Length: 173
Image 1 (tube, rainbow, N blue to C red):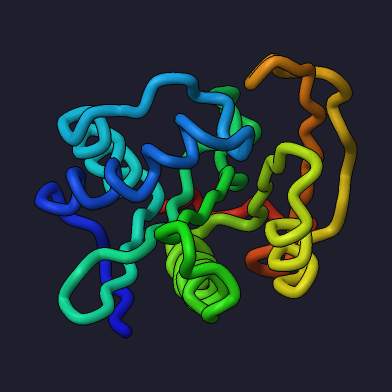
Image 2 (image 1 turned 180 degrees about the horizontal axis):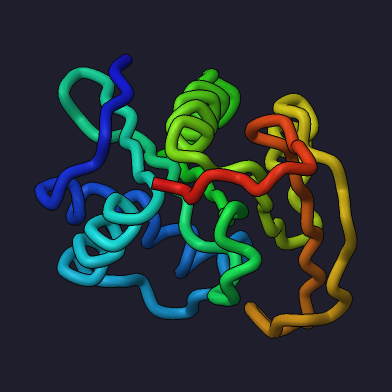
C-alpha cells in the first residue's frame, strides 16, 4: 500500500469512498454525497493550508485522511480537525492507522500542534482507532444532529501533534 498527497485527479475516487458513508450511515452528518468536482475542491483547499492524503492499493484509491482548520478564529490556527475514511469493508486492515500516522506527521511538520476529531455515537470502530492513536475524549455534544430518523450525539477527541511550549509558536506553514 502507498500513502501519498492527494491530487485533483483523486476527487472522484474520494467522492466514491465517501458516498456510502453519507447515504447509508450516521458517521457523517452530510446528507447528500458531494460530487467529484466538490470533492476535488475540498482536496485543493485542504492541501493548500493543511493536508489531504490518499491510500492506494493495487493502484486504486482505497482510503483518505485529511486535516482542515478547526475554527476560523486566529487563536485556533495551530489546531486542526482530522478525519479518515476507508472503502467499506477495509476497516481493521491497518489502513486507517497508517493514513492517520502519515497525516499527523505532515500536520506537525507544517507547524500544527493539536488535532481534534468528531465522532458520531455509537461508533466503536472509530472510537477504538482514535484511542489507539492517542486521542483523549474532551466532550460530547448530546442530540446535536438529526440523521436517519433519530437525534445523534457527537463525541469530540483531541491529541497533541507536537509538544506545547509557553513561547510564541511559529506560524503554521
